[in-house]
Image (cartoon, rainbow, N blue to C red; front, side, top):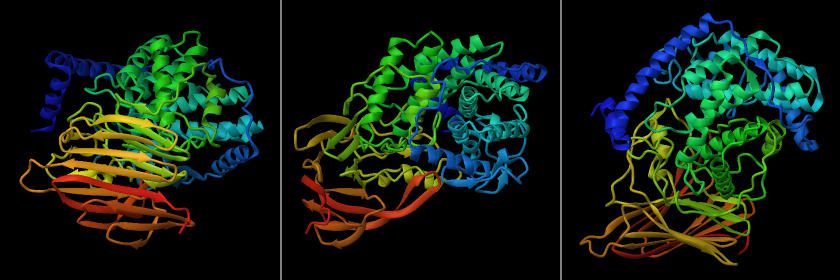
Length: 615
């Protein structure tokens, strides 16, 4: 079936025939208004003026010596054109049109009009994510943090230089950096944040007409290109609306009032539609949950500053989202912004990023504090997530809907149900292999999303989920289910089942302070022949195999020793190498434990114990 017909089929399934027709009409109307907007902006001389957010602290927040030094060191490096995106360096000097240059492929994005549905071509780089990441200006607030801490004008000058350089390099609607409304939204949040911080430090930059004009152009473009015409609305619409909300409150321009109301309506609706009532993510990605929660946190604070707080439903759902985020942090004491288990896609994206490790403190300082409180919890039965803790040990596992939208969609989901992640005494043991890439390497994209890439169990009689590259799934698994969960003074536990094997398989995990047990109970007794069952357990890269026997293995990491034991009818137990991706386009080799058996009925138990050098 052709892609367009397949998409139409999925739309009718999700929305119904009447709503699908309405959506198609909306797409046509949006296209008409979009082209009208392009003409209006080019013929107008409107300039947005900065009025500020009117909330937050007048002075930079207190920073420890370590944090202050980290901020200033990064800002100094940027002043010397030592920049980074993801984990890669890039430069702005000595390159023609640097904001349209892919430093990995060393290739330019041609100057022309793009749309989000028409990006890659024979004359473009392979992965638009690279250039977009640079053009989000994720690191720009670092310069403003340094200016706020030191009051040194050179950091303001560097900010101004970079923004004006971007404007010169990206004529309105005529470069790759106008193609995605989400990218525009993130860029506007970053620009607004730095102007706010500079103004509080007594450094005005917003008087430059070129900056005010570009802000208005981007806001107009963003408002007309919102992802309201998608069959399944995702984090893109949340980010777009949040960017419009922040910009229309901080900047004065003719459409600001209209934009504020549009953005508020979208945000109030999408926070309920895109998260479960228990606060867990519908996109089946913990990192994207953090991404949209960050947008909502900014929106809540800006709304308070405007004198029109968000609704009680919004605030309650955001509190539950924060409870979910807290449950997904392996180290309950760490303030590291990356301290979150990675389930599903993770691309290191942020609504706003502050250098130094104190994200929440700077968020409160710039946008104002929140008076909400959330109640910590570890079980999210609607989304199907469970977080187990025992002392400093931690495990998380999901067993709910496969992804948002079901067949044909589920864009950021991986085939990772019933795949536990494990930390013993804050040491990573079982990990999610990561994401690695979105575009430009289909084999790698497929590899990292597949069931074999996760700490799961394969049963050969069950249908498999089928990927749609580079995003989405043609067919998905039926919803998995959490059965029970609990804890006492010694251990925490939960059990779950796959949706397609309710009668045949149950997985139970149990966590103690230094020991973790996975028990798979199978019952294929009605079958004439035994069923093939395969296990994959992906160890963190730090662990190196020391010894192996028929039913146990030992691994070493510095002074720490990990013992893995297997109880039950296993026909083979071995190790192999797999590719672990700690961040976008980075990978390193690590060890995966493989086991296989032909079973009718019984229990297979895998025990992971941290020996810490004990004999």
